[in-house]
Length: 202
Length: 192
Image (cartoon, rainbow over all chains, first blue to last red):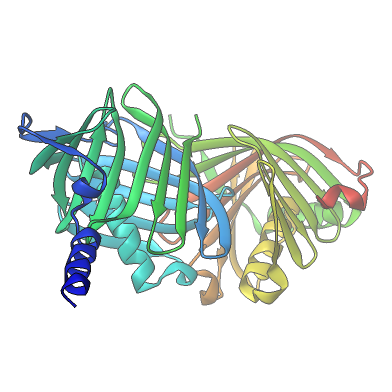
């Protein structure tokens, strides 16, 4: 019985272990107070990506367009390749506005997920709560919309992971980075069947 | 400098309608290059894409985007075939009446033959050497997507430009060039 209880506690400890522990991240003295996500920070740029979205068994494409209009203010639209607008959102400070959404996509849960993903993608300045290192570089723990976010950085910011109960929930991978533009972005959700691949078109 | 735009006289409008209808009737195929400008008011620049359009009467149309990405959309009767840079898929548009009707409107706009007073409030303008016709959609069910088609005709009655305006005033403008009419095109060209 005692062995069973010890095993149970050990199992619970393992399954409830923090994300950094599970990822074998080594705590370091916090050196940075804040970090910057530069990928949608240039007000003069129109960020236009060819998007492929896999949601459950549906696979569709289009253009994802992100524009910074002011500090903490982005406009995010999605159109088909032929120009039909599917959604158009505004993110301003913590406010979120649906300017337009076709009825087929106007689902509360989907919009909540997209709101959180776009908030993660476009938030520029984040306070660092904890700092870690791994074999590749530094990992900064921050918080957005009340959820822990881990920013992986080596030469550039190359990954953001959101975590819940110690498990990876959403993974944002940035690659082919040049002049503060991530030319390819992959967003993978672990708890729902949703994958988004973005590639700049120009 | 503002270009002069005048309202067309009813007789001139009638002459245009006859010319365009006769042309649409005798057109079996259209092959044309196009440049698409997607205008979103909040962007600094329009998103420009280029490609080739092929139309075969009565209802086959193929949009081949080649720049800056490869993407093919073929509307063939009840089916939309998509080839997204090698990823092929088919969408049954027969099941979505609205989508089908929207596509029929787009096909009509490419031919120019959409002078339907029941479906549109139509106004005619002369603009230097071209004629611009505004087709304001009457049926509210489309207003979620589009409110107006604006077609630009050259002197021969060919559509040079189609502008599809959304309720928000964002728009898609398609400019055609190197248009070839009635070149033989096989049905197989509209499959993938």
